[in-house]
Image (cartoon, protein in one colour):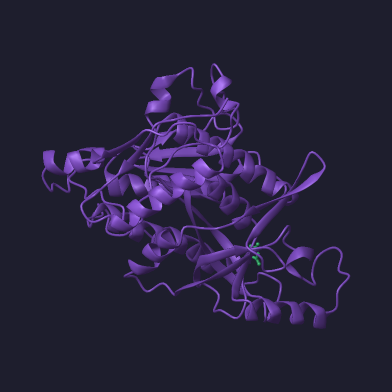
Length: 377
Ligand code: URA
C-alpha cells in the first residue's frame, strides 16, 4: 500500500550541498516508512540540455532560451506521504481543475520550477502577465469556473489563495489548504523536479518600517513555536513548519533593487483582529497594555511580521518534501497602531514589492537579465 514513485535528483557540477539535502530527505522518508523502494537517478535537468542546445538568445521564448538551470537550493523529491493515492484510477483536482484523466494537461506542468501562491485572483493574473514579458511566453490560464485563479507562464505557476468567489476571512486557512493539496498533487502527477513554492502577500510588521519585505526565517504560531496545529477527526495534529533556509537565503542574496528587505520570524495568526491582538475589531476583550506586552514578547522572540497563512503552507510543504519560502510586505507597524490607513496608491505599490523580490530571485536562478518592457514592478 505504500506509495512509490521514482525520485529524480538533479545533479549539477557544484551541487554537493544539494546532494546531501536530497539524501537526507530520502533517508527521512525511508525512516518514516513512506518510501517502499527508491529508484535514485542522477540526471541533468532538461534545462541543462537546453543550455547545450540553444544559444544565449534573450529574444527567444523562455522554453528555447539558454537558461542556466542550476537551482542553488536544489532538492528534487516528489514523493507524497499518502498510501491511498496509488489506488486512485484518476485524481480529480476538483478546485484547481486539471484531472489526471487528461495527461496532456498535466504534462503542461512538467517544467514547473516555481509556484507563486498568494493573494487575490487579479493580483495573480497581473503577476502572470508580467512574467509573460520576462519569458516571452504566453500566459496559460487554467482558472476553472468560480474557483481559484491559476496561471502558468514558462516555468512559473501563479495561483491565488482566495477563490474567485472570495472566501471570508475566517475560511482562509481552509482555502489555502485546499489549493495547496491540489497544487502539490499536480506537481507530483506532472513529475516535476526541484520546485520552489513561494508564498507571497501582505502582513503587519512589528517594529519595522511599513513597506519592508520580510523573508520568513521561521513560521511560528502565537506561542512562537515553529509548529502548525489543526484538528483532524477530533484530535489535535501538530506539524513542523520548517521552511527551506537555503531558499530563503537565495532570495535574500540576489536583491539588487531599493526595496527594504529583512529576514525574520513570521507569526501566523488565526484571524486578522483578535488573534493579532488588534483593539479595533467588532469585539475586543484585551487591554492596550496586554496587546503591547504581547507584541514586545514577539519582537524578543525574533518575530517581525504577522500574517495568516505561513504556518499552514510551511507545514504542508514540509510534510510533502516541497521546499517553500514566505515573502510578504508589511503594510503597518503594529507597535504604532492597528488601522491600515496608508493611502491606497501607496499600498498598491507596496503590494508589488514581494513579487519584484521574487522575480529577482527567479531571474538569478534562470540567469535572465532582460525585460521586454524594462522592469517587473
Ligand atoms: N495582513 C495581516 O494578516 N495583518 C496585517 O496587519 C496586515 C495584513
